[in-house]
Length: 154
Image (cartoon, rainbow, N blue to C red):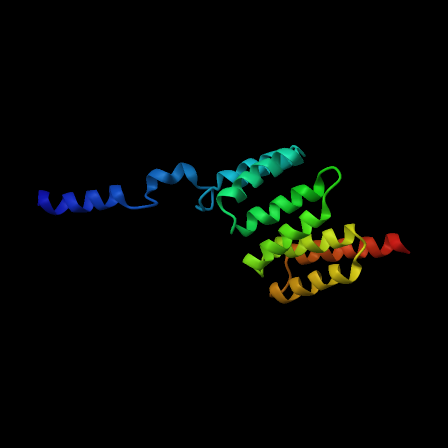
């Protein structure tokens, strides 16, 4: 009997993602990404440069992470004197990696509004309309941003 339990205990102890890693998960059970967590904390403080730094380091280690590209571009856009060519580069890279990334589609549309390109912003809204089955927060927010932009132009 003792010999049958030992392999089971060993398997549990060595299993990846065992309950010992619970401290590294959020309330939904998803693994917490320390880069995203630190970047979110900086963004909440409106420390755009701090968030950019964290995400730039994250991108150096994981250049194929769509969320890192998306949030890096977001924090660039929110910072002082954003380099819009860099903003567009990173949103487009996020969408190359994950074409249905709702956040990147929304934020890219908002970036287009920042440079006065309403038709391209509307293209992103149409992309979100295709991606979101019924409706989603990102579609609603970009639609509102476009409406606000059009109202201000009149």
